[in-house]
Image (cartoon, rainbow, N blue to C red; front, top):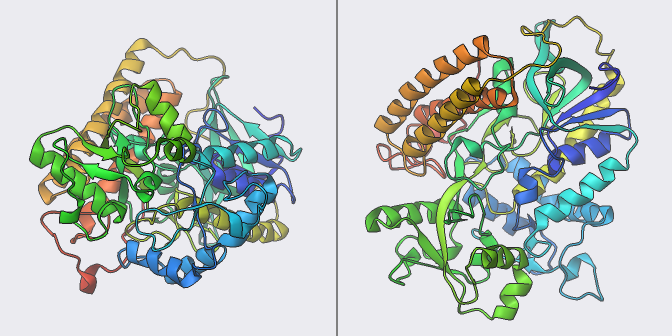
Length: 538
């Protein structure tokens, strides 16, 4: 616990590329506290293999990147946001290089932007994915963590989890003053006040049984913001990555989009290629198209997975381009130079989130949101591959600029705020009974979402999901009142909350668009539904 809880200008909740980038910029103007649930590097950023999409080649253009993004977004992208982010791409890449990020180059002798090695991924018309082999996210995260640790104005509170935002209505507007924090090691709750609060908690992939996300991706930021009354948008658009490894010991391991970009072929167990039946771009179609195609083929064949084939590529190229994937699968007994890779779709990226404006501000004053937890309008109904890290870097810079202006005009954070309803002190013993109940309810949420709110949905499945989640929510409410606070209980509460929000958004949208496919409304309805789904907790 920090010695003086009121002595921070900025509170950052989350430690991925978005949160760390924002923290570094804010540290130039005041003291920053970063609250992170586990280790600094445990985030969706760290799991990102593909890279950052950016126009750096002379054969490419901003307009092409914009058009590719808009096409993937199924009519729901905010064109102003897309233009702003895409045109900021080269400067974002340069800022990461200046930070020390070691991207892959065509030549070790000439490391200019023009000589960056570029990959091509699904939905892109040109090679524009800047990468560090196939561990881009890890490379960026490590450099950011190093810079944060070297900054004397930043305090990292690891093994801490935010419970709820602290807010108050002033002059007809709701204002955020920080958050209630649970110290996992000390088993204590305390309030951490700050003039500016940033949510950068990442995704919600753990709401499903199969996901590429780390264990900590339980939708904490979205759940907290919703409970505080912030606008939430487009949670029906959950992106399922088409190719997650199907292996009992490889749970959650993503087979990068870049594998198909470099020529990987999807096959059935019989060896037959099937993507030509779904899209002329075949394996390079956008993720929603490929995920639905694989889902359908699995259901038709009864097989548990399909296969990704790289065996026609040279082994030397495979090992150089995909060292992380090659090594990981080799340890699992799969030599991707000679063996097909078993793959299934898995929950990957949330295209909706907490609604923000062009400067990353939410509908609650002094509360900013950046990264996957934010709905900026960049991704629309389906994110274009490798646009997420780009959006995170660009919006972190923009949001920090806006937040710095807020700091200059802010009177301080000493306004009266309400007390947390479960003030605790000292050590608290978590019983085995509680652990078992929480684990069972967590599994119940994941099974409901995977069975009824997956790649393909229907009105009946969504109704079933809503009824079952209501029962689960009531059980969690009893736990919340009757048992001591714990890390797992906080995550369970948040996970169930975002599950309900996904179902609510999916039921509101009476069409199929992008990542949301409902067999009762199989067509895209531009007349009535070319708009965002907005929900608010009144």
